Structures are given as structure tokens and as C-alpha cells.
Image (cartoon, rainbow, N blue to C red; front, side, top):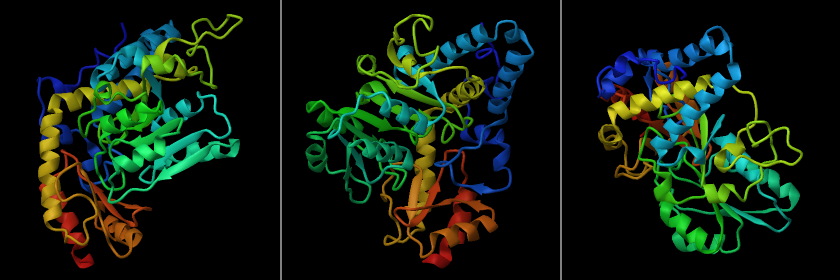
Length: 386
């Protein structure tokens, strides 16, 4: 048995935790008004300690005697915990480095032919753009679905995917903070046999994530944003029937049933997307982060984020608010005259947000562990923009 479950989290001694208690163990939040969780969520101390403890045990402690067995047992434990968290089975989860990594692993597992069509929206992060841009060199057509105010028109979506081999779209848009109707879009795509790949990186630890309810063929995500997990702890859900039709081009001893066999027989399910030697340290930290978020509870997290974002939006003029006025997520995008200069000016006052390339705006990412004071500091810093 590995230490993944034995690494006690002091803050989780009680069965429940408040957002304030979760925040108290995040050193990076001690002085700055940090409102950029949609890019990076600084980790609590115990998340970093869990990752460090695994590395020490693997290299110097009980895992050193059988490092492969120790690591593989830990990977199994992590897959089980991630699967529980996202509403999947363990054999439908592959451990990756990031959302981008997961999307690329799916993209490289399809036997593309010239004339195949990939559809993406104009709301995608580069993680959902660059892999398809690369495929254009091989004769694949990339069709970009235009949207309005972070919304996807269902009829236009149906037309776009009618002859497509794959569609890639985000569950929660990084540009506007809007929630797309994932299950509905998946159903539309599946009516024409289109493979569905969802970028869900803005969802875990932020809003409810149930991949079984979505019904998508694959969902890529990571834990370094709203989950407050370490970098390098990505995960990829692949429906087991969809996985059986995919043959990854990156192959290693973790991908196959018998690495010494004459013919490649991929592992069943999503494990075929894992490759070779890697440390489980970041994913051990991810499990600690998931446990902390579960201790707070997503209902409490969403209620807190809704309250704080409402407070922020009340101070933003209608003609400057590019996100929905009604709560959908903690991502709130506002129009300013010079986004990059505004971000720099706010940073000088220890208020951390980010600029966006499209729309050309500033985005605040407000977590349940944010405070009213931080929101007010941001509003004060933006007052001259109106």
C-alpha cells in the first residue's frame, strides 16, 4: 500500500472545511489580492508536502526497494480517486501532464485522412487550437465555429459537425466564463457519428463535473487551476468503447499489455494513453487537492463564488461587462481600454488578474477562497477605467 491515502492532511482532520480554512494553508495568498485562478491556483502547503513526501519515499524510503511497483500502485490509486471525482470508472482515466497533453494524445491516436474535418469553436484556448492547426499540414480541414458573447448556437453547431470526424469544445469558456451545454452538444455530434473531445480544464474544483452525464468520448482536464493542485497533474477521461477504436502513436510499456510481445496489444481503456517512466508526485498532490475541495464541497464553493462575482459585477458598468451578468462561473471578463497596461498597473498594487487575447479584455478569476476585500480592491483599481 502506498502513502497516497496515509498522507494525513492536517486541515482535513475534520470531515468538513470552510473556504476560509482552505485559504489559510495557501502561502501565496497571504499578501496579494490574487484573482487569477483560471490560469493558476496556488497550492496549499499540504498539497506540496504530499508531492514531496511521495518523491522522498520513492527515491529514499519504502519505494526505493521496488520503485516501479511503488509508482504503479500509486498510479492505480490516483486513477481511482480521479475517476470518483469526475464520475467515471478507473479504467476510463489516463494520467497526463496537462490538458494540452491530453488533447494531443487523443489527436495523435486517430488515423486521419486528407479531407477529414475537425470542428472547434472560436472560444478555445490554444490547447484546443494548436493540435488541429498541426493537422492542417496533413490535409485535415479545420472548421472554426463562430460564436456570440461566449454562446454556441445549436443549429450552427449541428451544421458544422454534420460531416466532421471530431469536434473539440470547452465545457466552460476561458474567454467569457460561460458554461456550454455539453450534454446537448455531445448528443448533436453523436447523431452524425462525430467524435467529441471536451476541454474541461476550467471545471474541476470550480463547478460540477460529471463526465458520465456529459456522454462525451473524451474529456481532458488538469488540477493546477481551481483545484489548487500542482502543475503536471493532468488527467484524461476516455469512454472505454471510444478508447478501443484509438491507437496512440506515442507508445511505451505503460501503454501495452505486454511490452515484450511481437505485436502491440494496447491496454484496455484509457491506460493506453500513458507512456513510460514518470513520477507520480504531482498526481499524489492532486489527490490531496481533490480531498480538500471535497471537504469544502462544490455546493459551498459555487455559492461562495456566486456571491463574490455578484459583488464584483455590481461595480462593473453594463457596457464594460463581457461575461453574463447572472452567475455562471468565477471567470469574469471586463472591457478596458488597454488590457495589458491595466494588468501591469493592478499588479503594481498587488492585485493579480490577467489580460486576454480575445476578447481584448481583462479577466478576473474569483475563487471561493477569495475575499470581499480582494474583490473591492480590484474594483477600486478599475474605477478609473469607467
